Length: 271
Ligand code: NAP
Image 1 (cartoon, protein in one colour):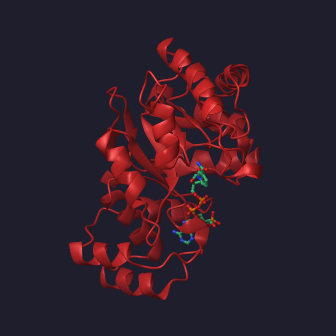
Image 2 (cartoon, protein in one colour; image 1 turned 180 degrees about the vertical axis):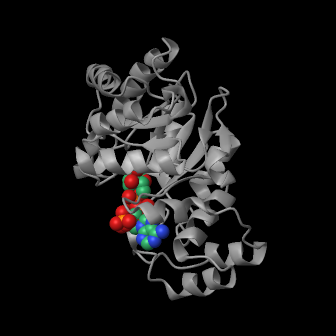
């Protein structure tokens, strides 16, 4: 399964595996430990967690017990969306480092707190970013980026940033292709990571996607993951089901340009 070993390079040369393993909503403890253990056994080498998921410690334990050298496993975590001061960011980075030991990519989880979506935190994001830049420059974080940033948030951050974000992790799936922010990122060398590539499961019952998938002898999940990879994004599917971990990584096929255009034009099933 070559997709598991394919990487994309950030502007600083650090390579991120283009297929990651999501852990949102997987409880800390045995559920996360077992899922990450199995994902590593299947061959995933990129784990996406966050302080807000509460499962960093179990991710770290699964990695430590896997016997795989930790430098071969790419780990992303995130500074909680509600933390918008320099001091809070410094502390959050330290807490995540204490739990994980090694962090390949640290993200600002969102440009606004989740209970205040759409509010302006330009100054707060700049302060959090400054703390991240310092940790990056000290070599504590191998790369730094953002998540859920629209063009307006990126533009504001770039006004004060010394380091251009290496990545922007955004919601991305057939019917929600994020053309504007994706091309803004592409122009600046910011890698786009596609989270919820199955729309948190909402795509799985789509008859339109099933009809296309069938023509390729693939499942809807495989078609959706392949779609975001072909759009040039890093894909971050989540499953705690071992057979689906294998299925989601078996996406080494090519969707035709005609079908890509069709998938681009689908309606978002979640709105
Ligand atoms: P997703 O990957 O879009 O979908 C996950 C759902 O699809 C689960 O219910 C899973 O069920 C099911 N599933 C997975 N593979 C399947 C398959 N082959 N066949 C049938 N069902 C399948 O969900 P997501 O968790 O929203 O997003 C993925 C990851 O992106 C997260 O875990 C997280 O790491 C990241 N994320 C980041 C943000 C952010 O703000 N930065 C937000 C959301 C997500 P089972 O687990 O029961 O198999």
